[in-house]
Amino acid sequence: MKPQLLPVSLSCFESFSVKRNNTPLHNDRLHFHPEIELIHFTKGEGLQFVGDSVRRFKGGNMVLIGSDLPHFWRFDQPSPTIEETNTNTEVLHFKEDFWGEDFLNLPETRRIKSVLEKAKRGIEISGPIRKRVGKLLNKITKVEGSDRIIVLLEILSAISLCGEIRMLSSLGYQKGQGDLDTGDDRITAVLEYSYSNFTRKIELEEIAEVAYLCPNYFCRYFKSRTGKTYTEFLNELKIGHACRLLIENKACIKQIAYDSGFNNPASFYRFFKNYTGKSPLVYQTEYLNGRCL
Image (cartoon, rainbow, N blue to C red; front, side, top):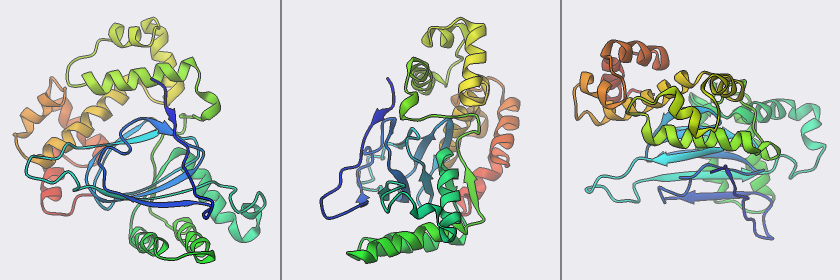
């Protein structure tokens, strides 16, 4: 399964799109589009895939996705006691050149051009700027005409001045509409298979067969395409799942290690701290106290 092209539909009365969604599965498939995307999660949580990055997201997170960068969000399944509409996102889509080819080459817009360049790897926005951008996203849904473009410029200007952004996809990950060849199909197949089977041990020969490659070549191929080893990717997937289990707080940490695909709790603790910067217990405690992320 390759990433699907999902172009954003526009009416004849708009040059870019602003929408609110409360359907948890509206982004639940790997896709890309020529439009740049700014998404603000106001409710809901789950796993996000941006390029070769796999992370947890939750309400309050904000991500800027560059043109043609494959991505999707897999919302956690709601519990029987929670309404399915307990998810909400604000999504802004625009093409980089919708205001003309020369606009971003102006001296006054060089910071905006720079941040859009960084967005080709996907960036997560945090800190005080995120709250300001969130207010502007709410504002842009209420204005019309040229005021919409003015507010969009305010949004991009604020992001360009943000000192707290995190690059999501690795530097070695390069993907675009023109690159969707058989090699990219292989990477996508590996991602989908890994997501379905990461809680058990996946043998090298097994995953190499999914990609129709011999094991030795698969290792070199995967790293050349993603900038990381398959083991590193698989551990990130496991840690993302562990984060969810820690937040749910329904099992002890040792059991969560096993349920996330780690056969050795000591390895789980080491990988978890390397990936999140915190021990599993600290991560869980901070989240349950409302301070995590």
